[in-house]
Image 1 (cartoon, rainbow, N blue to C red):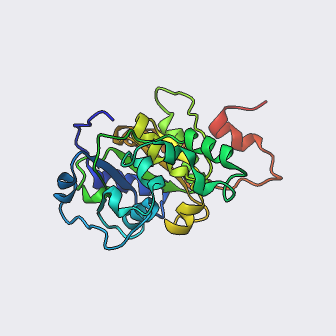
Image 2: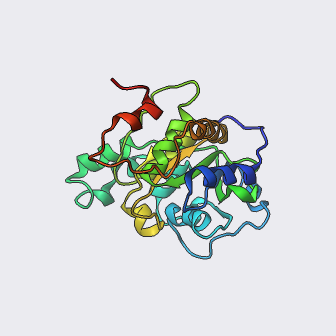
Image 3: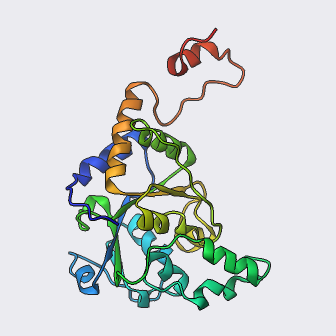
Length: 260
Protein backbone atom coordinates (compact mmCIF):
# COMPACT_ATOMS: atom_id res chain seq x y z
CA UNK A 1 0.00 0.00 0.00
CA UNK A 2 1.01 3.61 -0.51
CA UNK A 3 2.38 5.26 2.63
CA UNK A 4 -0.15 7.60 4.24
CA UNK A 5 1.64 10.62 5.69
CA UNK A 6 -1.50 12.43 6.85
CA UNK A 7 -2.30 12.87 10.52
CA UNK A 8 -5.72 12.09 11.95
CA UNK A 9 -7.66 13.14 15.04
CA UNK A 10 -8.77 9.62 15.91
CA UNK A 11 -10.71 10.59 19.02
CA UNK A 12 -12.83 12.99 16.98
CA UNK A 13 -13.21 10.47 14.14
CA UNK A 14 -14.38 7.67 16.41
CA UNK A 15 -16.69 10.04 18.32
CA UNK A 16 -18.36 10.96 15.03
CA UNK A 17 -18.61 7.31 13.97
CA UNK A 18 -20.35 6.43 17.21
CA UNK A 19 -22.57 9.47 17.00
CA UNK A 20 -23.77 8.66 13.50
CA UNK A 21 -23.86 4.85 13.69
CA UNK A 22 -24.05 3.84 17.39
CA UNK A 23 -21.41 1.16 16.89
CA UNK A 24 -21.20 -1.70 19.39
CA UNK A 25 -17.63 -2.73 18.60
CA UNK A 26 -14.41 -0.71 18.90
CA UNK A 27 -13.12 0.61 15.52
CA UNK A 28 -9.53 -0.54 15.09
CA UNK A 29 -6.54 -0.07 12.84
CA UNK A 30 -4.15 -2.59 11.28
CA UNK A 31 -0.59 -1.85 10.20
CA UNK A 32 2.06 -3.97 8.51
CA UNK A 33 5.76 -3.66 9.42
CA UNK A 34 8.80 -4.52 7.33
CA UNK A 35 10.76 -5.38 10.46
CA UNK A 36 9.59 -7.10 13.64
CA UNK A 37 11.52 -4.59 15.71
CA UNK A 38 9.43 -1.72 14.31
CA UNK A 39 6.26 -3.45 15.51
CA UNK A 40 7.78 -4.21 18.91
CA UNK A 41 8.66 -0.52 19.36
CA UNK A 42 4.98 0.51 19.47
CA UNK A 43 4.08 1.87 22.92
CA UNK A 44 2.26 -0.67 25.15
CA UNK A 45 2.36 -3.36 22.47
CA UNK A 46 1.28 -6.82 23.64
CA UNK A 47 2.96 -9.90 22.22
CA UNK A 48 1.15 -13.26 22.24
CA UNK A 49 1.86 -15.76 24.99
CA UNK A 50 -0.03 -18.44 23.06
CA UNK A 51 -0.66 -19.47 19.45
CA UNK A 52 -3.61 -17.66 17.88
CA UNK A 53 -5.60 -17.27 14.71
CA UNK A 54 -5.43 -13.84 13.07
CA UNK A 55 -9.14 -13.53 13.93
CA UNK A 56 -8.30 -13.77 17.63
CA UNK A 57 -5.59 -11.13 17.36
CA UNK A 58 -7.94 -8.73 15.58
CA UNK A 59 -10.60 -9.47 18.21
CA UNK A 60 -8.24 -8.64 21.06
CA UNK A 61 -8.08 -5.10 19.66
CA UNK A 62 -11.76 -4.80 18.70
CA UNK A 63 -13.31 -6.56 21.72
CA UNK A 64 -10.75 -5.92 24.49
CA UNK A 65 -9.17 -2.65 23.37
CA UNK A 66 -5.63 -4.07 23.30
CA UNK A 67 -2.72 -3.15 21.05
CA UNK A 68 -1.30 -6.45 19.79
CA UNK A 69 1.58 -7.31 17.47
CA UNK A 70 2.34 -10.61 15.77
CA UNK A 71 4.67 -12.36 13.36
CA UNK A 72 3.93 -15.50 11.36
CA UNK A 73 5.31 -17.61 14.23
CA UNK A 74 2.49 -16.41 16.50
CA UNK A 75 -0.25 -17.65 14.17
CA UNK A 76 -1.61 -21.17 14.24
CA UNK A 77 -1.61 -21.87 10.51
CA UNK A 78 -0.37 -20.53 7.16
CA UNK A 79 -3.94 -19.69 6.13
CA UNK A 80 -3.90 -16.71 8.50
CA UNK A 81 -0.30 -15.72 7.73
CA UNK A 82 -0.78 -15.80 3.95
CA UNK A 83 -3.71 -13.38 4.03
CA UNK A 84 -1.48 -10.84 5.80
CA UNK A 85 1.45 -11.43 3.46
CA UNK A 86 3.52 -13.19 6.13
CA UNK A 87 3.56 -16.58 4.37
CA UNK A 88 4.21 -17.38 0.70
CA UNK A 89 1.48 -18.37 -1.72
CA UNK A 90 3.39 -21.58 -2.42
CA UNK A 91 2.22 -24.87 -3.94
CA UNK A 92 1.43 -26.46 -0.60
CA UNK A 93 -0.68 -23.47 0.48
CA UNK A 94 -2.47 -23.27 -2.88
CA UNK A 95 -3.38 -26.97 -2.70
CA UNK A 96 -5.50 -26.39 0.41
CA UNK A 97 -5.54 -30.10 1.22
CA UNK A 98 -6.70 -29.56 4.81
CA UNK A 99 -10.03 -28.10 3.64
CA UNK A 100 -10.86 -30.73 1.02
CA UNK A 101 -13.79 -32.82 2.22
CA UNK A 102 -14.41 -30.41 5.11
CA UNK A 103 -15.27 -27.06 3.52
CA UNK A 104 -15.21 -28.21 -0.10
CA UNK A 105 -16.27 -31.36 -1.87
CA UNK A 106 -12.89 -32.28 -3.25
CA UNK A 107 -9.27 -31.22 -3.74
CA UNK A 108 -10.06 -29.34 -6.95
CA UNK A 109 -12.64 -27.14 -5.22
CA UNK A 110 -10.37 -26.55 -2.25
CA UNK A 111 -7.53 -25.43 -4.52
CA UNK A 112 -9.89 -23.17 -6.46
CA UNK A 113 -10.87 -21.49 -3.20
CA UNK A 114 -7.25 -20.88 -2.25
CA UNK A 115 -6.52 -19.40 -5.66
CA UNK A 116 -9.54 -17.07 -5.36
CA UNK A 117 -8.41 -15.47 -2.09
CA UNK A 118 -7.03 -11.92 -2.17
CA UNK A 119 -3.78 -11.78 -0.19
CA UNK A 120 -1.44 -9.03 0.90
CA UNK A 121 1.69 -9.67 -1.22
CA UNK A 122 4.37 -11.80 0.42
CA UNK A 123 7.98 -10.80 0.92
CA UNK A 124 7.82 -7.23 2.19
CA UNK A 125 6.63 -7.59 5.78
CA UNK A 126 7.73 -9.42 8.94
CA UNK A 127 5.02 -8.30 11.36
CA UNK A 128 1.55 -6.85 11.86
CA UNK A 129 -0.12 -4.90 14.65
CA UNK A 130 -3.71 -4.00 15.50
CA UNK A 131 -4.91 -1.34 17.91
CA UNK A 132 -8.03 0.73 18.69
CA UNK A 133 -8.04 3.83 16.49
CA UNK A 134 -8.43 6.10 19.54
CA UNK A 135 -5.08 4.90 20.92
CA UNK A 136 -3.28 6.57 17.97
CA UNK A 137 -0.42 4.07 18.33
CA UNK A 138 -0.17 3.07 14.66
CA UNK A 139 0.36 6.63 13.36
CA UNK A 140 -1.58 6.02 11.10
CA UNK A 141 -2.74 2.45 10.37
CA UNK A 142 -2.65 1.05 6.85
CA UNK A 143 -6.34 0.19 7.12
CA UNK A 144 -9.22 0.69 9.52
CA UNK A 145 -11.60 -2.14 10.46
CA UNK A 146 -15.21 -1.27 11.23
CA UNK A 147 -17.67 -3.90 12.49
CA UNK A 148 -21.30 -2.93 12.01
CA UNK A 149 -24.78 -4.34 11.58
CA UNK A 150 -26.26 -4.39 8.05
CA UNK A 151 -28.33 -1.29 8.87
CA UNK A 152 -25.28 0.61 10.11
CA UNK A 153 -23.12 -0.65 7.26
CA UNK A 154 -25.35 0.44 4.40
CA UNK A 155 -25.57 3.96 5.83
CA UNK A 156 -21.77 3.99 6.22
CA UNK A 157 -21.46 2.95 2.56
CA UNK A 158 -23.97 5.64 1.58
CA UNK A 159 -21.66 8.13 3.30
CA UNK A 160 -18.70 6.77 1.37
CA UNK A 161 -20.63 7.25 -1.87
CA UNK A 162 -21.91 10.79 -1.11
CA UNK A 163 -19.06 12.48 -3.00
CA UNK A 164 -17.38 11.20 -6.18
CA UNK A 165 -19.87 8.35 -6.42
CA UNK A 166 -18.84 4.98 -7.73
CA UNK A 167 -20.44 1.57 -7.54
CA UNK A 168 -18.67 -0.61 -4.97
CA UNK A 169 -18.31 -4.26 -5.86
CA UNK A 170 -16.94 -7.08 -3.72
CA UNK A 171 -16.60 -10.83 -3.91
CA UNK A 172 -17.36 -13.52 -1.36
CA UNK A 173 -14.64 -16.14 -1.09
CA UNK A 174 -16.62 -18.03 1.57
CA UNK A 175 -14.50 -19.58 4.30
CA UNK A 176 -11.41 -17.47 5.09
CA UNK A 177 -13.39 -14.34 4.37
CA UNK A 178 -10.72 -12.22 6.07
CA UNK A 179 -9.29 -12.30 2.54
CA UNK A 180 -12.36 -10.32 1.47
CA UNK A 181 -11.83 -7.66 4.17
CA UNK A 182 -8.33 -6.99 5.47
CA UNK A 183 -6.58 -9.11 2.84
CA UNK A 184 -8.19 -7.24 -0.05
CA UNK A 185 -7.89 -3.82 1.58
CA UNK A 186 -4.19 -4.32 2.33
CA UNK A 187 -3.51 -5.63 -1.17
CA UNK A 188 -5.52 -3.06 -3.16
CA UNK A 189 -6.08 -0.04 -0.92
CA UNK A 190 -9.78 -0.23 -1.81
CA UNK A 191 -12.70 -0.31 0.67
CA UNK A 192 -13.45 -4.00 1.18
CA UNK A 193 -16.63 -5.46 2.70
CA UNK A 194 -17.00 -9.01 3.99
CA UNK A 195 -19.49 -11.33 5.61
CA UNK A 196 -17.30 -12.68 8.43
CA UNK A 197 -16.86 -16.43 8.18
CA UNK A 198 -17.22 -19.33 10.62
CA UNK A 199 -13.68 -18.94 11.95
CA UNK A 200 -14.08 -15.19 12.54
CA UNK A 201 -17.25 -15.83 14.52
CA UNK A 202 -15.98 -18.89 16.41
CA UNK A 203 -12.48 -17.64 17.20
CA UNK A 204 -12.72 -13.90 16.63
CA UNK A 205 -15.85 -13.17 18.63
CA UNK A 206 -17.65 -11.56 15.68
CA UNK A 207 -21.30 -11.12 16.56
CA UNK A 208 -24.03 -12.85 14.58
CA UNK A 209 -25.36 -9.58 13.16
CA UNK A 210 -22.01 -8.00 12.23
CA UNK A 211 -20.45 -7.28 8.86
CA UNK A 212 -16.89 -6.00 8.47
CA UNK A 213 -15.48 -3.28 6.25
CA UNK A 214 -11.76 -2.59 5.89
CA UNK A 215 -10.64 0.68 4.34
CA UNK A 216 -7.85 3.23 4.26
CA UNK A 217 -7.98 6.11 6.78
CA UNK A 218 -8.66 8.64 4.02
CA UNK A 219 -11.73 6.66 2.94
CA UNK A 220 -12.99 6.50 6.53
CA UNK A 221 -12.76 10.29 6.73
CA UNK A 222 -14.56 10.54 3.38
CA UNK A 223 -17.37 8.31 4.67
CA UNK A 224 -17.74 10.47 7.79
CA UNK A 225 -18.06 13.60 5.69
CA UNK A 226 -20.82 11.89 3.74
CA UNK A 227 -22.55 10.68 6.90
CA UNK A 228 -22.63 14.26 8.17
CA UNK A 229 -24.36 15.45 5.01
CA UNK A 230 -26.80 12.54 5.05
CA UNK A 231 -27.63 13.29 8.69
CA UNK A 232 -28.45 16.90 7.79
CA UNK A 233 -30.82 15.51 5.17
CA UNK A 234 -32.62 13.43 7.82
CA UNK A 235 -31.01 10.13 6.79
CA UNK A 236 -29.84 8.77 10.13
CA UNK A 237 -29.28 5.61 12.12
CA UNK A 238 -31.27 3.95 13.55
CA UNK A 239 -33.67 4.10 10.65
CA UNK A 240 -37.17 4.81 12.01
CA UNK A 241 -39.78 2.29 10.92
CA UNK A 242 -42.47 3.89 8.77
CA UNK A 243 -45.03 1.09 8.79
CA UNK A 244 -45.71 -1.60 6.21
CA UNK A 245 -49.36 -0.60 5.72
CA UNK A 246 -49.04 3.19 5.77
CA UNK A 247 -49.58 5.40 2.73
CA UNK A 248 -45.98 5.82 1.56
CA UNK A 249 -46.24 9.14 -0.25
CA UNK A 250 -45.69 11.59 2.58
CA UNK A 251 -42.72 9.65 3.91
CA UNK A 252 -41.07 9.27 0.52
CA UNK A 253 -41.27 12.98 -0.25
CA UNK A 254 -38.71 13.75 2.48
CA UNK A 255 -35.96 11.58 1.02
CA UNK A 256 -36.92 10.73 -2.57
CA UNK A 257 -38.82 13.78 -3.83
CA UNK A 258 -42.52 14.55 -4.30
CA UNK A 259 -44.52 11.54 -5.38
CA UNK A 260 -47.46 11.65 -7.78
